[in-house]
Amino acid sequence: MKPLTERQRQVLAFVEEFRRTRGYPPTVREVAAHFGIQPRAAADHLEALKRKGYLHREPGRSRGLTLAGRGEGDLVDVPILGRIAAGRPLFAAEHLEGTLPLPRAWVRDEEVFLLRITGESMAPLLQPGDLVLVRVQPRVAQGEIAVVLIHGEATVKRVFEEAGGLVLKGDNPRFPPLRFSPDEAAELVHIVGKVTGVYRELR
Amino acid sequence: MKPLTERQRQVLAFVEEFRRTRGYPPTVREVAAHFGIQPRAAADHLEALKRKGYLHREPGRSRGLTLAGRGEGDLVDVPILGRIAAGRPLFAAEHLEGTLPLPRAWVRDEEVFLLRITGESMAPLLQPGDLVLVRVQPRVAQGEIAVVLIHGEATVKRVFEEAGGLVLKGDNPRFPPLRFSPDEAAELVHIVGKVTGVYRELR
DNA sequence: TAAAATACTAAACAAAAGATTACGTGTCAA
DNA sequence: TTGACACGTAATCTTTTGTTTAGTATTTTA
Image (cartoon, rainbow over all chains, first blue to last red; front, top):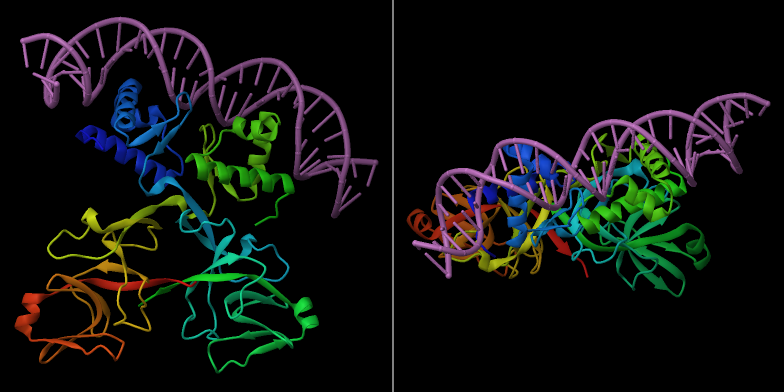
């Protein structure tokens, strides 16, 4: 990409900063006001930045600026759930700890959320406080780790379907497996999704 | 937060989707056009969404919509390094796998990067393929996990300063600790930063 | 060294966009 | 049964905003 002049770098930095902090791009006039110049001059800089490939402009559109290439592009807001409760829609705002924007490439699917681990039933792989990435899906393969609603309470367990019914096992041997007959399983157990990643903060 | 009506949910979903794919929020009229309703009706829905706390509106501002609670606010692009090489400046583009935008609140400090783990010397805590979050700092406390350059090669180890000099230990007992006299340490060993988090993809 | 590109001022235009006024329908809980 | 509320049409008003025309001066680049 072509090099930028000092002024153009300043303008680009302002657009990025504005976008990041305000959530939407600035207008030509807002750029102008920030630098104390006329709208025309600001528009010239934006045109130059477009010509050099640093941002896109949609002509005639207010705030029609998008940053080319770098990160910003295509983010998905993944909700962080403190816990999941019975009945309530999955993304009920009550338990929303916040959201984490992740690149779409990482989270191909739409239906994804993050869940904070409590309890040690999946130790040592999952520790309390860990954040797990969950892809919503109604079934998982034998032995895969899933978020499961039992009677409305959410837990994370390995799921096994056996002759006698459904078995939910924690990795931690101190926690005995939960067994459900096919009937019980159908009534009480609901698989929310598969755990596809873990983030652990090391202190 | 108050529950939404079906129509309001649709409008909110549209705003989110628009923001995500276009990079800026829709205008009232764009919302109206999408649902085939009058601008007034669309504005009413947006007002309702604001009243119920799902988004903010900046009065009079075109595209002045921001999603409430959404992390979007303040992101820092954290570089993902495939490996770290000798001498070269830390963020040399050659080894850049990409960047991940993380909320500034998570990454208080500026000087932070992500490193892909290779080798099993820190197993089972760190597995090959794991992504570790590293905060750049020249010293770490006794026994903390650090990214260390030895002779230019980057490794992740626990750092112990003992009477005899510096000891770098992997958690995996199959890897013998590396010992350096104070002189050797000063010459060969360079602490890049502290490992403050791990992300592991579970397949 | 002449032509581009950069970096501006100033004024004005037309389209886009938010807000407002006025009106109408159906639902549902007090 | 009477509001409050969601949901809508239609038209209008006022700002905001992108763009255009016109012009000046400096710096780069071919």
